[in-house]
Each structure stands twice: as C-alpha cells, then as structure tokens.
Image (cartoon, rainbow, N blue to C red; front, side, top):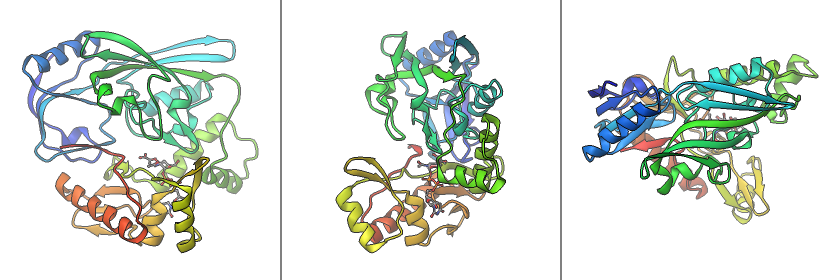
Length: 340
Ligand code: EPU
C-alpha cells in the first residue's frame, strides 16, 4: 500500500476545507489498515480515519499525522424469513448502500436516504433523519482495536448510542476503528412516514399508501429542497446539534417564544430544533460573512461559498452560537467533528 506525503485534504472533505495531511493512506482491506496504523504508531504519530469527509472540518494547518481514508469494501446479505442481516464494510458509500437495500425492499434505512458519507461513519455520530436513527437497525459493529491489535465486535449496547453520539466519540472509543457495520433489516413492510415534512410530501402528491421506493424518493426530494448539494457547495450539513434542555427551561422559552417547536425526548427533557431559533429568533438564515454563510433554505447548515478557511468557519460559527446564547441563553455545540 502506498503511503503518500503532504496530501491536500480539502478534496477529501465536503466542506472543501483543510490543509495537508503529513501522511495519507487508503487501505483496501484489514491487513492494509493494520499496516497503516502500525506505520503511524511506529513513527509516534496520531492517525485520523476519514470516511466520506462529510461531517468534518479540518484545520487550515492540516493534520500532523497519518490520515487513513477508509477503503474497505464489501456487502453481505443473509435472509432468514422476514429478517435480513446485512453486513457492510466501512468504506462503502452510505447512500449507495441505502439505495441497494431499498431496491431489494429491505425495510429500515429508507429514511436515511441521501445522507452523504460512508457506512463506517454512520454509527460514529449515529446518523439520523426523518424519525429514524441508524442505531435502530444496527445489531453490532466490527472494529479494529488499535491497543490490542485485534478485531472486536461491539454490540449495539456497547456502542452507547445517543442523539448524534456514541462510544466512538468518547476517549476510550477512539482506540477503535470501525471496519464493518452489521444491520438487521426487515422484509416485512414497515414504513415510518410520521415526520411532518414526509407527511406533507405524500399529502401534496396524493399518495395514500406509499411503498419503500416512494419513501426514498420523498426523502431525496425533501433533502434536495432544503439542503445544499455537496457537489455544488462546500458544507458538512447541520453544523450544530439540536440542544436538549430541561422542561423548566423549555417553559421559560415558550413564554418568550410561544411558537417555538420542540420534541419531548424524555419525561423532563425536550429537544429544540435550533434551526428554528437561528431563523426565527436570531433572523440569521442566509446571512453571510465573506465566504462563509448559513444556507438560505436551512439555517443550521453552514456553507463555504468558495474559498473559506477553517478559521473563518469557526469564527462564523462562534458568532452564531454567541447570538443564540444572547437571545435565548441556549448553549449550542458543533455536530461537525472539528480537527484542530
Ligand atoms: N426550521 C426553521 N428554519 C430553518 C430550518 C428549519 O424554522 O431554516 C424549523 C422547521 O420548520 C422545523 C424545525 O426547524 O420545524 C426542524 O427542521 P428540520 O426538519 O429541517 O430538522 P433539523 O432539526 O434542523 C435534523 C438533523 C438533519 C436531518 C433533519 C431531518 C440535526 C443536527 N440535524 O435537522 O440532519 O436531515 O433533522 O430529520 O439533528 C445533519 O445531521 O447533517 C442533518 C442534515
């Protein structure tokens, strides 16, 4: 396997931002992954795994260690009655994988259509959209344990999934490299079309009994209308996580902003769509500073209009967070992984 030096990372991230990787490798199988990791540890350098580069902001200074672009491919399907077990290697493209499952009428991930990125990245931040999170269909995750130099299998519980969070984001979890994700899907028709945008889509199209392909089509259309096309504009999707707050705090906010939408996520906790706050309270949707802005159709999405630097994006994001705090006292944190 070739290990390159001084490789520009901007072309490997959908933000189109990032300096050079000191070293860069693209392992195509487990042995090559191990070889790459040993190369880095042998030199005393850190390593960074890159999937589709769609949820990451890499510093203008680049990365001082080895960047590993995950290239392990392969999909296996085992059907057992109504249940379908599908294993997908980390380097598979997420949406091609979803498309394949929809084509075969395997139910479970159609609502996660058109999310940029790789299969291996999906459990890390527990990707979610339109009422489905990937944790709902993951049975286990295969990882390479950097410390013990061995493959391990983590169960769904071991992964400690939460809203845009998992064990892999914690300090201990950083010892593991995802190599394969095992899913349990179903051949029995079961669709989740309760999310407001999805319901509205079918109502307008007068589709009463959608099938799995209709749902994928709906999600692709909804996302196309709201989110920028990563082929045309630099972005990493939602920049911030939606904050989860106490019921008391929610009641305070509702006194001030009676139209504020919220979702109860536990008995005493509510999730606030911060895009609504940025848009309707701070009136910042579509705002722009130089080459950085908030997308005109979705206020949670930071975009690079061309030549923005990571520093500019971070300054812009800090300013958004500051204004949200000033108006609502809500603290918001990046959803995008920031590599300094
Ligand atoms: N809204 C506004 N103004 C806006 C955008 C949204 O007022 O500019 C309002 C909407 O009317 C709606 C609410 O805010 O009432 C929520 O908006 P939306 O349905 O677009 O969802 P979101 O909470 O902003 C989350 C995910 C998205 C995912 C959508 C759809 C996070 C951080 N983001 O966004 O995921 O596509 O739900 O389920 O949880 C991503 O992670 O990169 C991403 C795009």
